[in-house]
Amino acid sequence: MAHMKTTLDIHDDLLMRAKRHARATGRTLRAVVEDGLRMVLSAPSAHPSFELPDLRVGDPEAADPLERYSWPELRELIYGDPGTR
Image 1: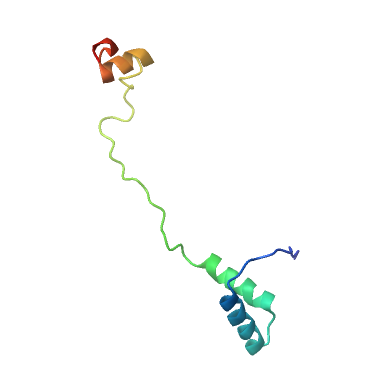
Image 2: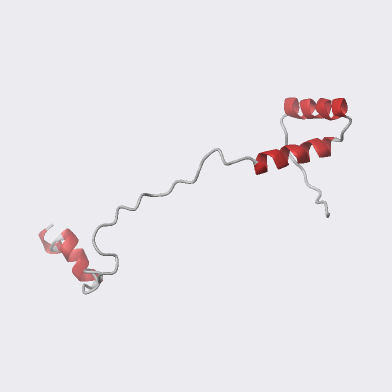
């Protein structure tokens, strides 16, 4: 297994606690950090992905009623005659 060297900025108190834990358990700091990362990455997501409810109406196979309009025609339908503003 290949190992990649990296630099992390860790809060001083957290690093001291991790070093104490490593010493107390007879492990290296690297092993403690790797195990912590494995635990976090294998845990279920705290924020389940959101899926929009399907609120479609009508026949999804039906032709798009707006296809027959050009963009300028759609703008006029939506906003009215631009000369009247």
